[in-house]
Amino acid sequence: MSEGTRPARGALDTPVLVAPQGLRDQLPDQLAVTTVTLAELSAGLHTTDDPVVRAQRQIRLQWVDEARARPLWLGRAQSR
Image (cartoon, rainbow, N blue to C red):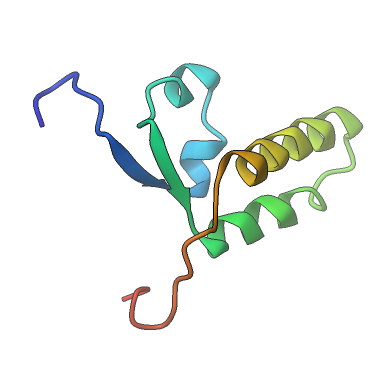
């Protein structure tokens, strides 16, 4: 893949999903997330008392949940 070319597919980790919108606009067309990433995004809802931040996190989680098919399961073998 040459510099500046977007990959067709990719798996997203939590830091990419919480990145500024400009970076998310550069993501591949076909995306996948792992069950770990979904768990981290869900847990993030409960780590703030700020209702605005919580709402932003809920929107992000909902976007990921609605935009993706089945999340990728990561077992012990895949985590190494």
